[in-house]
Length: 448
Image (cartoon, rainbow, N blue to C red; front, side, top):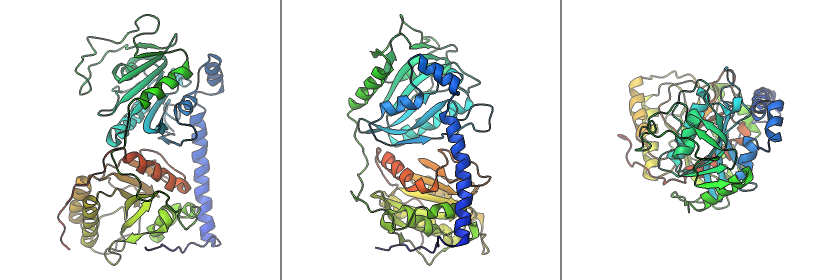
């Protein structure tokens, strides 16, 4: 056992300055989150409630198991665009009847839940996560038409899909309930109609152009008919329960893991640290169980930190590399480490940061075997971006988050408070273990 130490001093002015800088960025992020949670504004929210309807996050709260967490994805999507913050849809991962599910909920208070290009991308990302991690998907649908959307909203492949229709579902939004495994409609409110029928490629053998979805009677065809919204959510929970879903991946190795020995408040300072002085070990000391970290090849390619630990009881390989071309020694270190992670079926966390400038001999030819090894790796990859790291992306992680940074673009799945890193990654690790965790064995040529 190797316990990481720390050199951060809370009394150091630089520590306090870094913390202050990150807190300012988090205040801006919180303002955007508040704007997204406000939906279409107080007037539209009041009118929606007056109709006896629930808001999307209220629906999600009633769907999920009591007191269970909800990992919201891309909560501030579309910020700075012509569309409202949040992209008129809420997506995330939560637990329903003990089963981790991807949840997609339209926000009918924003342009009546109209689908725009950001909505499409946000839902596509949610379905990708559902398919890759073998997570059932629950859609809470109420969307009256399209607003410049690119089309193509379909349930995920290879996993069950359940849909509750609370109101109008027209245009592209109508295809989700039409193609889900289980469809629940709220009596007197649910109406499904495709305005522009489209062919379905790769999702069903039925050509929807020939059979557009239209209401049949007052409520339309449904597997189950709910009396009201709460009853619809109850039926959705019941449907998930009857899936008899079981995780294919192994449970945590340590049932009661110890918390890190160092205060996560230090991550606020690290988020604003000068890249030249950034030490990834300080991050690992604040997110890994008991701050226990077995470093891999500490004397080789020292700008690249790799090693083994556990996070919320799950074995994890961690790799922190600056975004730049690698030396031959660094590239070899990455290939060897990925080989071992795949040989032992151990998930990987990639910590991406700007890093210190490289003064040795670097050649992009050394990046090729490393990129090849990453591409061939089949164990789950998680990615965390620290600072304004804008290099080329060679991996396709299951989840990708970032810390707030000045001028940095948000990661695919959202910007998180650095102090929440351990919790967010723990939820992600639990989700990826819904699927089997399998390695690819040798992922590249390794010559010690």
